[in-house]
Length: 335
Ligand code: CP
Image 1 (cartoon, rainbow, N blue to C red):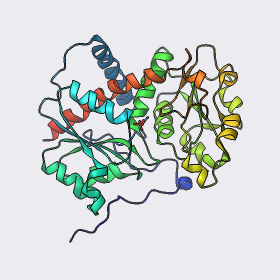
Image 2 (image 1 turned 30 degrees about the vertical axis):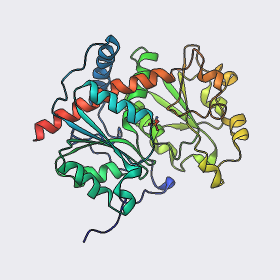
Image 3 (image 1 turned 135 degrees about the vertical axis):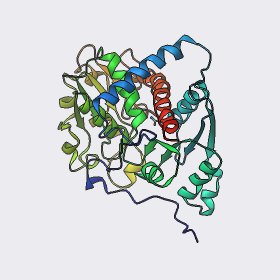
């Protein structure tokens, strides 16, 4: 009898380690994280994403790179950008893309996550795109499914590798292709941020530096093991930086006493015009979205010429095209 366990192994506590070590790169059918990905693979993915972006911008018709590939979008946690851009990318490349509605599924009757994904494998899905609140859920599936490639679309506090790739592509443009010697400041809830973890992993591999800052309650105890430095104030973090990324404040964290109030957060840590003036003159402002306007990011900054937030969104489709092609090619080679 199958146990009614709907989740993979419990995530490690925030302070237990810089990354939950689920990333594997030996099997290119899967993309589970950017930690441990080689510089060569990262650069190749970025180069391909840049080419895909040119094609997407050209308005050329759909292609057939993923013809015959069934892609299942299994988002067991809410998403707008990631889900929609994966769907756009898969369809533009000729895949048969289907979306799983987790909220109206038999997960609610106690069916396990693995049993659910095995159904999709039995139905012919060749690539699973998985978002889940549990760190390690995509790796758990990659280990237990037989033939299906698994792409991590954000797992708990672990990683969000395609967000990391789109952020790298955005910075590649802003920094004219040169990561060495550049510095990104990341401001906000580092402890719970899979976006920060993927950005730090990718940027440090490419030779850039990352400074983080945020309320002490939202910084992992061993944050420096991630390969970044910690600034005591947001001004220290942003002074002379080549870019800043504001992270979404997850309002539910206030309930646990990790944050005082949104007004105080905005005053102490918010990215506003005064603080943006501390950046280098050509530095850009990033946010993974969704934005709490007026909290972690002043609305006028989000809408300013320094903001590349919508470029990040557009780059997401291109980055996901590159990832889908890579994983699908590896699936075919393994078949
Ligand atoms: N950046 C990001 O993951 O956004 P969504 O939650 O809307 O996918």
